[in-house]
Image 1 (cartoon, rainbow, N blue to C red):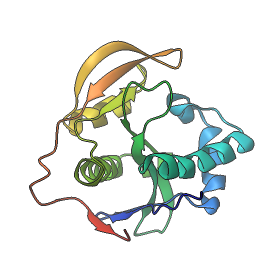
Image 2 (tube, helix red, strand yellow):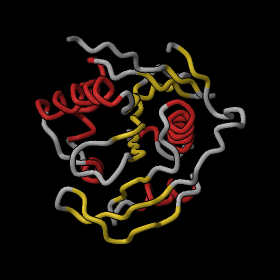
Image 3 (cartoon, rainbow, N blue to C red):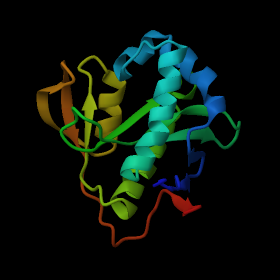
Length: 185
């Protein structure tokens, strides 16, 4: 039996949250070749990036949610990813994010993660989720705080590594969505 699924398209003021595309592979490979990728499972070679890209699509097919890739509306450039991750080894579904270096410092991470978190609460029954954050990842910790998350566990284990767990506040799903427009579902 073949599974059919649709990855929803979500738009914010400056971003499009969309399905991963094959043409994202070169930018992913470049990102995972840098030290920045160490905070999110890197480094990875092109084969491992291919596997990661295919796994992202498979996650949507198997769970009904996953990581969106982010396109900057102004430039049309792929600038990162955000969304929900729940694979073996995770305690519960996680809101994750990563931005390319050129996209940082513009508020895009907050805009994207807010939209993903809001969508997950409203349409995927994932509310009050966690984020795993590496102890050395100061930028992600600052973003988690901006999103209203609070430190829940200082020294959790994730796949043999130590990380913090940050808990996001529950969204009131009865209020209108402020950050995202849902299309394509």
